Image (cartoon, rainbow, N blue to C red):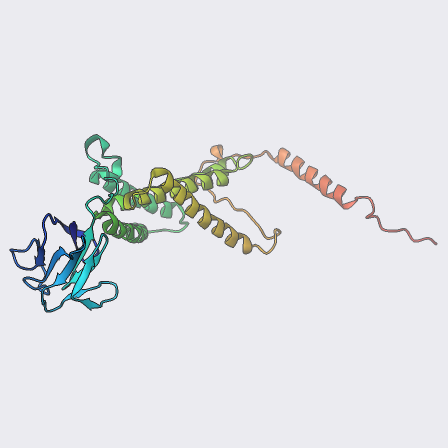
Length: 326
């Protein structure tokens, strides 16, 4: 029988194989299972055969006894079985069958298998700083009035602070599930997604300004952003969970798809009519030679064509006013 000593987060702090019975448990150094717990007696409990081929945990007249961690009920004798958890003082013991199956081993990422920049501190820090610079540049390009460098840096730092909160939450989950914090890696992931979002949306504005007709640049940028968001969520899951890579991507696609659907329906519900729908393309600081233009003659010809189309629609059959007979 294996005895696992758990900490307050239910993580295994110690494992002891009991090879012979009776086996003693307590704070004393002569026990088979030694507990570092001031609320446990020197000789707190003993595991022995019950005479019917089973094992039983018996209290040895301790001060605090044996407690069921779920119900809090005190007992002086508990039948031992695989999966049993019992509280001694402030320590929880779990009994495990030696033949119990374990989770697959985690891959140790070292050397050539260390992965990308997210696993290298200098590379991750460079990406984070680059994202901050990109945020400041994006803010500066969107301003039409005079701005100060301190204001640009302040906006970038606020955005990075929000990313840090997101990364910290994932790192905490990582610490609970895998016993590794990995904050820098979880910080790297949303920075890559944020930088890709800024580049995709910014590139969409420039392309829509330079090539306004014929290509759905907004749709292309949306696909890129959704792909980055799906990759980011899958990358977080890969560090906090032991599910397979296909399952990581399926969960990410499902969550991002659901959130995108809710956002689309919410935005579509705000449109009261199609007549008020307008599109805008921000102006870009380019010279006149680089801006696509139309000659005045071509523009006037197009206006005349549109006027003819409108007149033709206005004089459709059945719309003529009846002539009064004298």
